[in-house]
Image: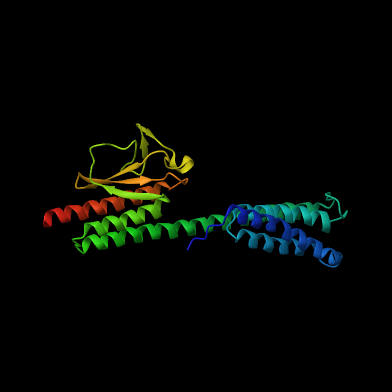
Length: 252
């Protein structure tokens, strides 16, 4: 299950990621004469990796920069100055920064890929569930339509969705077959600016080249930023409704 952090929570995580390496360095000050600086640097790398593991991209990067700066300030001579005189300490500081940032980016990227894979699996499961309902041959097409409408609301992050059998009047905006949202002949950058909030968005329901109706998507009170993959899944779900309507027409 994907956990969404609020902006305040993300800010708190980043702030903590910057503070913890500083606290570690301060705690090591009484022992700096007896412990190798490289050993402390390795400890700071672990702190950076832990910060990166939170999944907040900037947490790991901030921890790496904070760790390198505090390590240089508190644990290298001359102490309490942002000056490093020993060549070995300069190399260690540079490596601490680079390794920390690299670890942060790698872990963040891996977490993003894992989240994306989970989302793709959820999308596929939604299509398969709907296909199963259609394949079962249910005569209650209203149930299929309601099921898909609910999925579309959740999938696209919109306010409402309802089915309309009247296809004579086109809506100002439309979600078309390839997942593009078109308004007045112009493709919209949905992932950057979101779905239109001032009009309904039409998603036509097709089966074997025949239009069977349309879903009207409403995103009037929130900024909905569905990805291209999510919009393509929405089209596939609408096609399942088209198949259900075609089956119902043949059996009636």
